[in-house]
Length: 390
Image 1 (tube, helix red, strand yellow):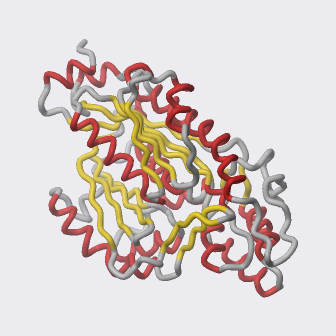
Image 2 (cartoon, rainbow, N blue to C red; image 1 turned 180 degrees about the vertical axis):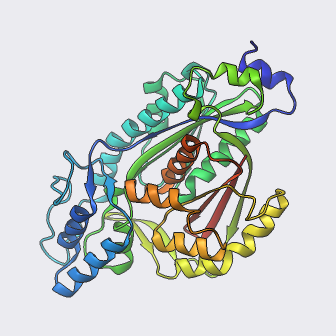
């Protein structure tokens, strides 16, 4: 049997393959009733505000979400020491430094769990990793998650690193694009790409409708993938990965990625560093902008890859919210069940920002869903990002 590196050196037609994936969520989670009650305590000062927040949480489509701040599952009420109760309308909660310090403690743990699972499922040993791409928009420190992963996983000291920061919900596509570029430039490369997001560290106090919407959606999670040269049809590569679960072997080929900046959309979605955490705003205009601009970009982009809307077998649309999923479904004229997996991930985990689309890909792989798949995400800009997986 040929080793994977030899295959990459001798076969010019080998593709950039996602060899394996891993995911991780916090140990504890809150149900939507507890999350809504917490939002009421942190944001509302009138009965009218409370009714509006309760209605918003009922419409999110989220049943549970994980948070590194919980020390037990929350079924009716969230109890934690991180966010003190709202005492006045002027309260803004923990400082950004306090939130960042917690990120530095918690993020490496989730990232390590997801990355270790990705390595196991890929059949690539930690000492064979040549490059590391980390993706996050919810915290930064130096030395940071990348160095922690090198130490905790036993990656080589010569591992080359790239940090993809502050790209938001479509960050996984930016991470895969970066990893694919590294593999394209170095045929013998094995790249570990890891997204880790601790959105619950940035809950905002007070009654600001746009920020309350974002607080109703976000959660914590991590996802990782190992990429390298290979072929889904190459028997030697498949033999080399036989030790892995079949559903996790060779997830797919990263065939292409693309981007489109939506005109006149700068304030539709924002993510800024404030004195009391990172301040996310999600305008009610976002679904309308998606309906107006998505198909005119995506259809010719798919055509350039030899695909059509109808030929796509799996739509990994980032569930930035139920209205965003409905807008994507409507403008692309998708079947009513086309985004069931996106809705399922949203229901089970909430919006984990950059990690979320990787959870959807993993479910596709577990289901044995035929390809091609399209990853589709939306982030501050308003920017549309897309990737084609074959």
